Length: 231
Image (cartoon, rainbow, N blue to C red; front, side, top):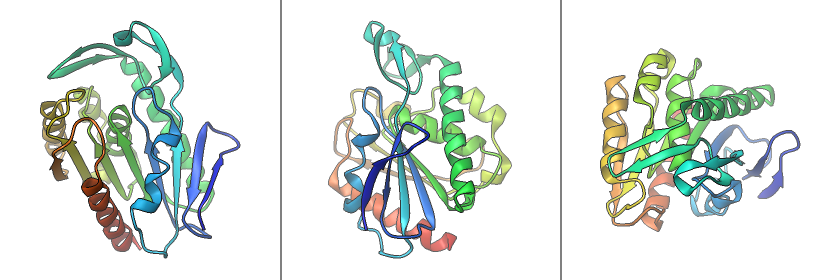
C-alpha cells in the first residue's frame, strides 16, 4: 500500500509502504525545493514488503536567503555567503530546523515508532539538518542518510554531540562533479563526523548536485540492512 497525503498538524507529506509501519524515515529536501521533491524515490528504493516503512517529507519554512539576493524560498536556514570550501549560515535557523525534526521524532514516538526505528535523511541543506539532528539527538536513532551535503556549523555539532548516537550507522554520498556543494565540503563533513567516533559508509558517484540511479540502489540496500539489523 502506498499513500501520499499531507500531515494534518505539520507541513509535510507522508508515504506508508504498507499497513502498520514499524519504521520511519524523515527525509529533508534541499534549498528551494519542498517535501514532494523526494517522495517519488520511495518505490525506487525497492525495500522489502515487510516491515512497512513510513516516509515523512517535511517542508522547510519560507525565509529570505541572503546568498540568493534575499529571495524568499523554502530553506532550512539562511545561507549568508558561499565559497567553494565553506559556507556562512544563520546558525539560529539551523537550530530552529533541528527543533522541527525533533518534534517529528517525538510525534512518531507517540504514534508507536520509537527513536531506535527512525532514520533521518536529507539532501544538501536537508542533509546538514539530518547530520546535526541525528548526531545531537539525546536518544538513539536508527541511522542517518546524508546526500550531497556538508556540516555548516562543526563546533555546534561537536559541542552538542550526544553519546547515545556514537555508533549510529551513516550513509554519506556525494557527486564528484558537484558544483553547488563541493566534494571538498562533503569530505570535510566526514572528518567532523569521524571526530565523534562515527564511521560513515562513504560513496561517490559521477554526477553533479543531484541523485543518480546507482545511488538510489545503494541507499535502498543500506536502508534495508539497517532496518533488518534494528528489528
